Length: 169
Length: 186
Image (spheres, rainbow over the protein chains, first blue to last red):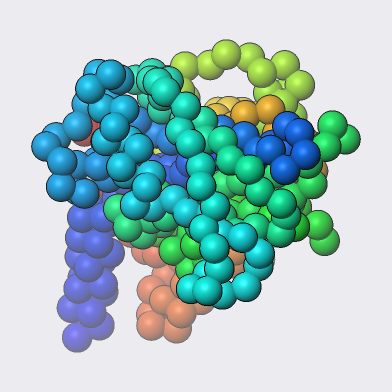
């Protein structure tokens, strides 16, 4: 009986390992949010190219290859419209006013990562809701560093499925 | 604790304790599997050597940012896993008290350190590197490593209660690590 249990345990461990094993997949994006002048902000965001392509394809587009920048600029804009929102204040976003942002064109492509730049005008506090890639990867994390003056980085935040927003103070 | 330190502490911890990613986790399991808890000198030496060298590698990269091929680093990490797990299987799970395992762990720590840096560099937004973030991530990695070792010792104790010898457990774990490491490669 004991031998049977041992073999069953061993087999289960091996099966679980073989089925789910992966090298270290990093589902991450990183962004800097820098105040360039009074109430003027520039957000520079870097995403893995293959992750964004998969997320946009899952959104309903035909299989996306972001290397064709001119062709896909509008689709990247549409994807961000759907998943990236800014709200004034730090209260309930249902009653808060959204903040308009603009996406610089063109986005910068390289085979490994895509770099996008957003610009907006906002007086802190305001909320950043960044759902990019969260619905595609359960373990996705969007990392932010915020800089409000030349003195250094004043705030760091991680957005994930459990916490899809943060407040810039 | 500052928000930066705690955030990167969390990122470092879950970089090791991550059920979706096996490479670093299995290396620690394979390294520690045959060593009895009571033989504290060998496992403490191996763990310390691994920690010292991967932290050194991360510090050197933070200072010099030596360009390294990410693909080679990933293969290097897998190679450390093959050797370490293969050794356990080759020895049929036996602990060799005279083996200088800490030398192997120390050498392989440089490769894992390069991999940690490569991943950490992605986690830090461009231009936002500070030593505080580095410290948080490094401390998180160490915490994750200790959690894996603690879990391994608990698992071995449970299996021992079920009648498994340490050698059997080490052999099973070594075989599992080797099998998964080969699967990761191909």
